[in-house]
Length: 449
Ligand SMILES: Nc1ncnc2c1ncn2[C@@H]1O[C@H](COP(=O)(O)OP(=O)(O)OP(=O)(O)O)[C@@H](O)[C@H]1O
Ligand SMILES: [Zn+2]
Image (cartoon, rainbow, N blue to C red; front, top):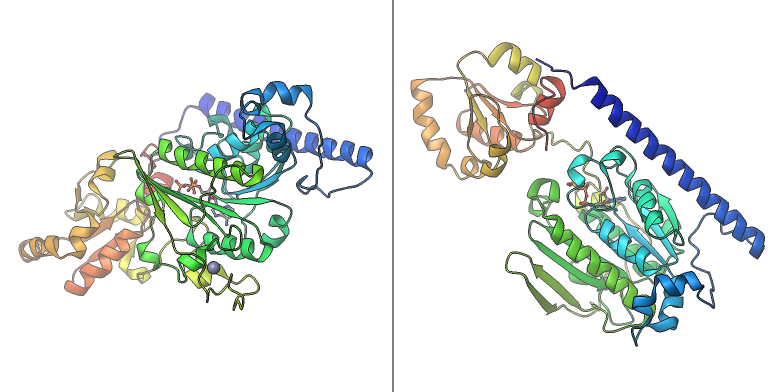
């Protein structure tokens, strides 16, 4: 069943990745060299930290030529450019938001950028994560972004943190930066960044995007600016949260919000315009409308930013939110092992026999790819009972075994659990690991998304 992909293609991809990895090592060495050179000239070491304590007093001729179009802006000028050159910005998440944000900050001449991401580049990132490339699939996102950013602006000092930001490393990583950008994709990281920014007294430029919609605001700005907890004292229930991997997103939407995050960071550093604090900008990409809504000011009894905070050190945010901070290896474990069937067992013992294969993904996903014989019944129709009424009639006549499949084997478990309540005696199994397991274990030519 498994068809081998062309050997030269695999060889080519391997070589491209090897080149990218070597380039990442080379960049890290060049960065070390620059740091050593600056240690020799200043007599002090910054231990690989951002050069936030830099005090450039002058622009070079290269700076003047490079930044000329923004230098002539009356409210920006030499003073603004020098502030940017002496600034350090930390970007958490080098994905759909973090890539454009980093690109505009490096391009504008931000002196130091810190890039935090635990993940590696995947093909499904490329439509929106504009700093990564085909050749760098498999490379750490932080390293991949550094390669692209140094090509754009070799004067930018870039520090890569290719690890998960958590309560143990956050204060250490964040303390040297002037502004933090939340370009992450999960609630646990949002609370972590908020609390750490409040404790460290740093503004947090927070962005999010899903489907065709986006939002951006600045938390913890000045004495009156609310923090994330002032607005959301308690996390949402896990089932109310959707990420881009499940809900989908258009790259131009993350690009819009990421670029605006860079703009707010530049305004904060330079002292330009009205910072988007105490307001939330909502972007509706489908009607192309921006709405600016006022959000509440600081909450007098906020657990972290009030005068008598209850939270004075970082907590376990995954436990607090009941959600993971990573989307890696977090499969739902809802069913007992005997209520599930592996792709190998399904293929061997059931696929060629009469059975009902229900695919519970949304119709748009079913149209991308489907297993032979699969019938599309989106999860919502199973949960609202509308499909089960039909099924009841079919059961009485056929009694066929039922297998339920989805993309990764999470929704299929929810469907099986629901159906089992109605038909406890019937053979109903969830296809363990879903279509991803099918591609990985049965047919590598089956599309993966
Ligand atoms: N606590 C964290 N520490 C480091 N990186 C984080 C943390 N939380 C989220 N991220 C990173 O933030 C980025 C969010 O970007 P985005 O949602 O566009 O990417 P993605 O996870 O690659 O998307 P997809 O869901 O399509 O796979 C990801 O690259 C993710 O690895
Ligand atoms: Zn608060």
